[in-house]
Image (tube, rainbow over all chains, first blue to last red; front, side):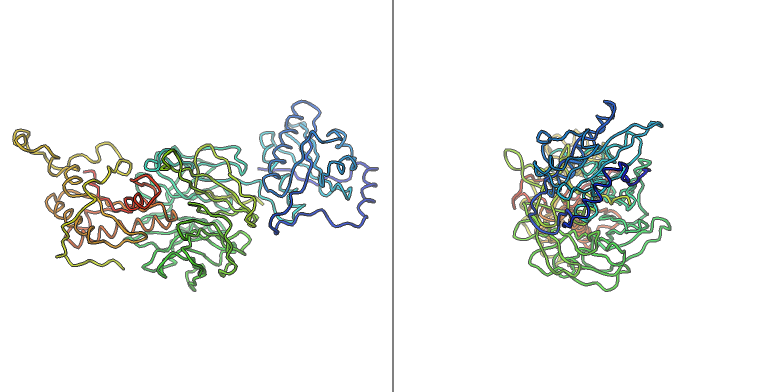
Length: 446
Length: 175
């Protein structure tokens, strides 16, 4: 998808002069520190983007509501009720009257406009203002086909998040996951994909065969997953552009637990031979397959470090399930988890600094993070069963699934997706049409 | 391999728990007729006198009179004494019907993570295969498949259900 992206220059001479003056007032930049726990949410005013026609105005309202919802879900921002707004959106678009926004305690103000331009494309521009400094923090315009309005809204929300927190956003992303329904012993599982906010939900498979553990390629145009097609469990690649699925390689035993390498050229996974699971890579271009571990224990759930030089994985070679790291050629295997309990599903953070995991202890399941050397373990959430953390591309938020006993007799299972901040705050359900498991967060497209 | 084949003379008399094993509905799905009778039934006339049970050599015969499943301890894949007794009966039955191929399914309870359980189910299925092989069943007759924690047979979230779900199930292959 192509966008024209440009900064909005100070087009209104008088206002510009005023703003330059205002900018000289010494003041700390408007900022949310997202590394602290329990941050008080920043009050923020998102006005409806204006339009000259009703169609443009409708785009404007829709874009604003998507931006507002994105920011709200982070737990870092508190969008104010538009009923409290004093200055109307059209006037804001000429020039904000900052006093009006200070009165309702909005610290940041967002406005913009939607415009259909000559060639049938939609142009959307936005500005973010620091209300107390009376200063524009960022302004940009995007031109795209109208059908892309939602994606542009997410991109704008990412810009705002980035400008205020100093961290990359994660709103222009998708989630691939396993949709589930039916009783636990006859569960129907389907590959499904949706935007990070639940919009544009689509089923990718019909549920005729069991499918598990989907993960995005770095380009996010492909998904690698496990399918029991024809009752033979093997790793497949689903191409989102063609809708085609293809088996990955010709392996004599079950292949499972696949993930792409950071350069997208390889898939790392487990293969079971005569009952024993070891870790292999398969080069998608050359079809060369390489064995990384050779051990009589279970070796599975491999995940690359973002630089591709290291691999973290799960093994019971020490007697119980623990987390190990090794070089990407299989050398230098070292255990890093030493706490009490069993550890599983390690996933390297996109920032490279942390490893998220599932932990089992005392009949409970936990999602936690530890340093890449195993230090500084922190547990973020616990339940009857939580499993399979996946990182938002900025490495600040995790998504996972949670299962709870359900039904009158508590013999059923309710399985849903949740997201949680790295601080352990802001745990929220990610709403899906049916039950859900095995989420994987897409990267951002640079 | 940690798996050890224990002394063959240790034929335990007890195979409790197997006779009442629940039907493997979901896991034995597949294409229609996959579980059809694999050997000729005795003629109706010859059978009328006493036989009301399953036809010898049939899937039902195997499930009811032999026992199609064995159970494992938590996070374990060693073949217990109880399991050995069942597998000996399975091996004897398979010797009697040498044209029957089998698929051994490995299953886990829900108290583990998905990928690890796929690996553990694979180990369990292979532990059964190895034991049958040691009893003289050709490895070429035996295929294995792991379902991890995907196909519980007992519903519920307690040890009673989990114990039923940590299992190896021998199913008769289609043709």
